[in-house]
Amino acid sequence: MKIAVIDDEKYSREELIHQIRQSRPDTVIQEAFSGAQAMQLLEREPFDLLFVDIHLGDMMGTTIASLARKLSPHVQIVFATAYPEYGVKAFELGVDNYILKPFDPERVAQVLAQCAEAAERRRPAPPVEEAPVGRIAVTVNRHTTLLDMERIVYIETSGTDRHCILHTVDKSSYSTTVPLGTYETQLSPHGFFRIHKTCLVQLKLIRDIFPWSNSGFGLHMQGFSAVLPIGRERVKRLRERLRL
Image (cartoon, rainbow, N blue to C red; front, side, top):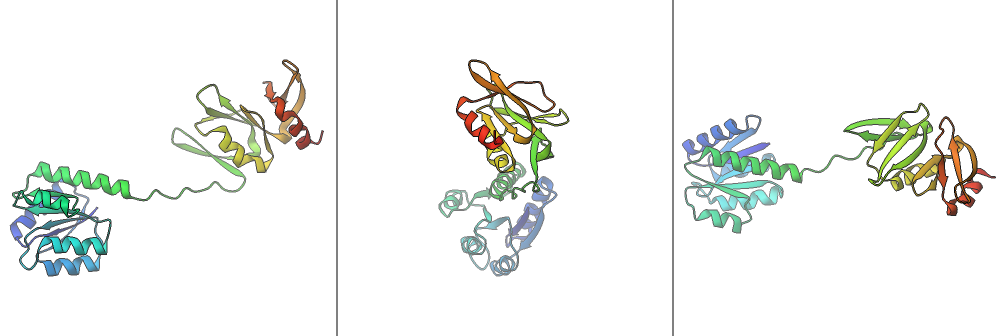
């Protein structure tokens, strides 16, 4: 986090910088001892957080806060003041927080933590990288595996929890929280077909199709003995896809 401390009183400025470094040693801190110097600093580089004294020698801290908002709409501003009544004024002006002089280390640490948390919430999420063509990203317990689509034999739902299990040609299985409908959208253009509301298969790896259970049909996949049901309403479309 990059911080600017703006205060015309040297002792107050140094004390606040010391407390910030005690609480957040990894922060980058710049300082300004007047309103004019603060304006030059803000025009020159961006900051995540400003501590601004209300009464500067040459201008009011409210003027600095207004300029800072125009230059950097997302900068957080904390008023530093010896006057408690400015706590209410701070929020009326849209300032994020305030601290009172003499500075209390616990209060400074609290405000820093709140500002750091707010900055993290505002930080844009990193772009989602798509898996390379011909592969599918499978994340289990924060570990991401890139599977070749050719290796996936079938995907089935896992009971009532709506998780999915991916079965591969080498008999490996991967349990994920991705809905089956998402896999259907992703894999249908690549030779996969949803034979049932609970199952998606790779068409070229179907071993056989046979009558099964109450005048319905089932099938086996190559290398697997499990019987996979075919939904009655999907039989015709499956035959068309297999050109049977």
